[in-house]
Amino acid sequence: MNILKYSIQKPVSVAVFVIMVLMFGIISLNKLPVQLTPDVQLPEITVTTTWPGATPYDIEQDIIEDQEDTLKGLQNLISMESSSYNDYGTISLKFKVGVDIDKALLRVANKLDEVSDYPENVDKPIMEAAGATSSPVIWMLLEMAQGDPDEIDKFRTFYDNNIEQLLERIEGVGSLFVGGGTAEELHVVVDPDKMARHNVAIDEVTSSIQGANRNTSAGNLPIGSKDYRIRTVSRFQTVNDPLDVVLKDDGITRIYLHDVASTKLGYEKDTWAVQSNGKKAIVIGVRKEQGANVIDLTAKVRQVVDELNDGMLADEGLYLNIVHDQINYITTSINIVKQNALIGGILAVMNCRCHPHLGNWYIYLAVGV
Image (cartoon, rainbow, N blue to C red; front, side):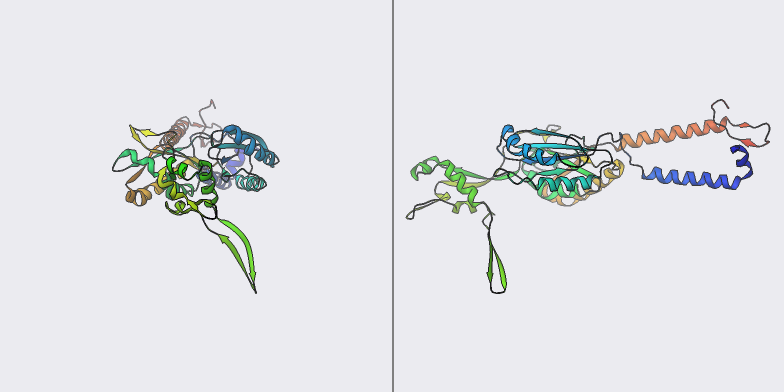
């Protein structure tokens, strides 16, 4: 079929076809994810398990190996890499292209439930839809808006309890990287002289506190037509609660924790610090979900940050500052592409020629026609 002749004979059909192509092209263009670089990484899930005080060898032997034995049977799994550090270990799972990340998260969670023989004091594994090694697209700093800048270290627990979940709920956020600050913790300060006087060893103090700071289920108690669930609640709620823990009881004399020690609210050991322009800060990196629109994600993050700065953070004398994002570079690149396309179209129109046999004007691209 002579396409040129058909186009002349059916101008309405050709016009409708061109309009439909343009319409679908514009719709598709608006729905395309916009980001600095294309997604070339495979769908990845990172599992992080924390065991305070453990060495990398202990974490590898007692946690990571059991998790690997369970997770290696996942569907569409391509590779599995693990790393062990002081206090925690990670497992990175990579899946085939096109795998639904939400379904993969569900399968990983079900598999992790099969690992039940964890050592004591091991925290529940945390799963992240974005890989732990992926680069954040937005960097923020939590700083003191007023007062001593060094006091920001004491607001890590405030961030964990009040701010982090608000950022994680934003559509398109895969995971957050957080660094700096020290979390609140309860400090038990023992008196060696009093311990020696009462013949109490340090391991007795530790085991007694750990045993008392837990809620225990005692099963069900059926009474008549009702079934009562019995549960002992003894987790510490205030700083003074541990002082009534019994360390020794020989039937005559009871030795309590307040006889040999005192308690106070403190902060965990500062292992590393973050500074901005010579002032301490808590750094927050936002990793995006695969396929998320970076421009839309940045706009949503900025909206939430503005609301926090005007409300909750202002009441605490804090300020959340976005120090880096990719939106300026992306919009500049898009504008350059649009400008080049416009210039190319103008040059194409300027190079139009008249077909000598058809007696009508047609536009030909400047490609030597």
